[in-house]
Image (cartoon, rainbow, N blue to C red; front, side):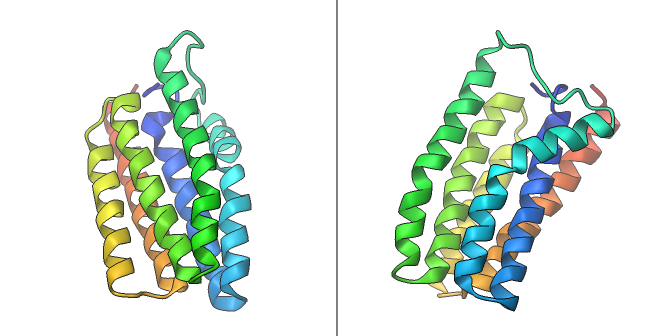
Length: 169
């Protein structure tokens, strides 16, 4: 899993870009547009990440018999199941959608520690989880919440990619 996906770095980075785009939509248009940007953009994170990975020389796949591939798919299904919950929260306060999605994604990254065998995903998941809670407690608006999720992921995506390049396959 680790070598096939470049330690997962490209996916984390692309996810961060989707979050930043979502924040931009919140800032330029509305929270509603930002929410839908994140939902629809999220659908394309894996295919775009795989394409970019292949373009830069990363295989972008794994052995189909690897049970960690099943864990990755199960985590994806869990995120999809949580989106209606986050969306429901947005009907009360728009910023809660972004804070809930940060927490949901934080949990997903904790499983990446097992999928990729890298402790940095515990750090990423923990930082996102703490950020989500802080954003909620401080009653931060949707734009800053989306921006926070995006910046954390872009930063970690870059750090993980650097690890991949240094340590190799």
